[in-house]
Length: 609
Image 1 (tube, rainbow, N blue to C red):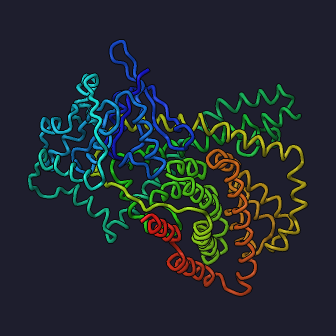
Image 2 (tube, rainbow, N blue to C red):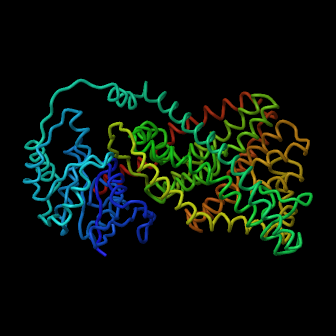
Image 3 (cartoon, helix red, strand yellow):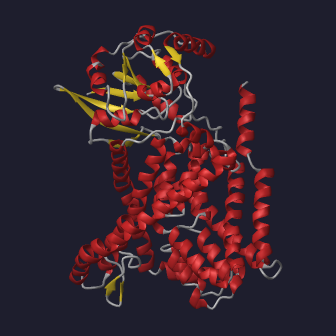
């Protein structure tokens, strides 16, 4: 089957073109030997079928990153390349076009967003552009589907114009000469939408806009996610799936090894989907009753932010802060999502470019970003002890996020390259493309993450059933008492935290802890191992070696933070001063010690200069 590869800069409407060409039967795959994703679909023209591949968005085919390397490989293996070009930013896009034309492959240009160009006063002589490039140029409006039939009909006319490679300076000169001949710009006044675009990038107005967008996105994900989760719990698990599991439990004799593995433990003769730990009960419930509702809404919100043009602006505004700990601005997305649920946060981190970034984000999110359920329990229970103690918990997590990020950035090899991102105009997303993208992402979660989530629940269940958890409790009791200053009974609470962090926080209440001990317990529960489902997804996303490294970091961080609080809180420093001091010290460290990655990048540039 012949391959048609769509290639273009990010945010040029390539995914919308792909959506129109391929219909509904598509799948997301990892490019061989990498974690870089691309989308695959099928197009039928008459009796002939073509595989349509949507290459990762790239600015160049001269590889300087794994994404660019994958895009270049896909172009080289194509039978036809559709180069999607943003008509509103012709010069920047034609730079990639010039590289595509140097490859030994037939090419056709889809000059997209031609309507938007007209609205901006940009007029392009399409016939002249076609003549200068030597390949067919078809104008399209991907959102409405305008010109796409003409694009498909013109595919057999794609031309192989293999040219001699140009030097960088010559390439810019060539592109500039083409643009000067085909493009004219008419002066016009800014619209209110363009004024909003400018305001989104200025610190004085952009930071409040970021705060509002993140707040609304967070509220939407949590609010709608909880509504869907509640509906599923009541009607699907309570009304349909629950009775089915009860009958299976009775058929298995309400006990025994197989029953404990599949159904889990019974509480007063009944199944508790959150706590029974059976593969078919807790495993299925965590996947479809907890993770999927929140992740579905998140993917919908993420798709809207991507296609509306706001996501690159959010990344730019967050980039300076995130770069202090060696991350890109795009890393803020999984971080914010982590406050809803850590599982989709870890899955969202796979969109980051390098293994280094994914490791830092996954580790920091697992350690310093409590999920909504745990957050609610901390606010409710620690808040009763006074606002100062609640402030200590969050100040400690903020301190951990900064300090741990600085440490990993300093000692992890390599660097995170400076973010180069094109800022697209604001536009109304295509509903069809949104729903299609949502379907692909949800399908990817179900196919790829489910075995790991069920496997994680199964492993924990076996540890409990075999008595290994009780044995570990005896071993670690002296450590809990000596380092953290907590009673020995807190061991079981920490072990339960591996299953449900919110339940574990509630289990601190019967232990009769004083305020200092309760704060220590809450911080340690927030910072050490994530829940079993998150841990299983970490294994899938990071691999065994990096997951093991991350787990060691989590344990050391949690016990170090607990030990610090045990030594200082109330005995040396009162709670209000402790909270303020941690925040101030973290900020100072971020500005004084941060940006190790940036310095390494500059050193690397000096070496290659």
